[in-house]
Length: 176
Image 1 (cartoon, one colour):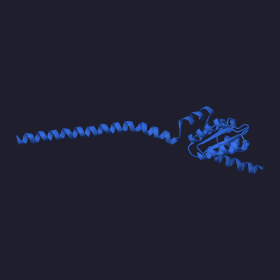
Image 2 (cartoon, rainbow, N blue to C red):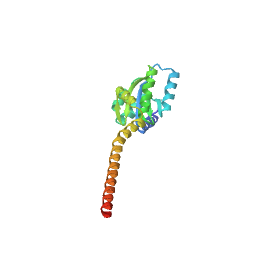
Image 3 (cartoon, one colour):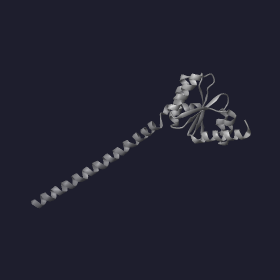
Image 4 (cartoon, helix red, strand yellow):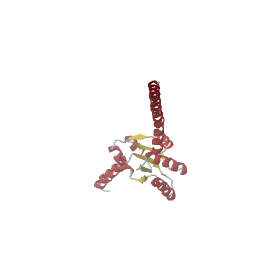
């Protein structure tokens, strides 16, 4: 491969790395073709893509983006998983697939520009999807908001009740 081709490929890899929210690294040594196809299919269902790239070029692209910790993990047969959609759903899928296929070993990754280790990716996988997390936050916020709305409504009811009593007393005083 000529130097110009290498420069071009590094630029393409750099584009892949910077275009997604998360990239996970896995070692795939010993996986059969059928296993790899199953892993790729499962990832594709969750808007993630698995790519095997030349490690020296990937290392160079990672270093250019400031991912030195990532470039240290690019040893041996390593596949990159690009989370094109929800990064937490992709982490969950990678974790499930590594449990199904013991030879698929999670090595870490990059999430929002920061290197995350294997343990952290496992923790992300346990969190659930982004929509589930947002629903929990919304549910947590809706309780106090509903309580405040109830208090305001009760204040309105009590104020209206007090005005009605004053009106009745005034009418009773006028008729007497």
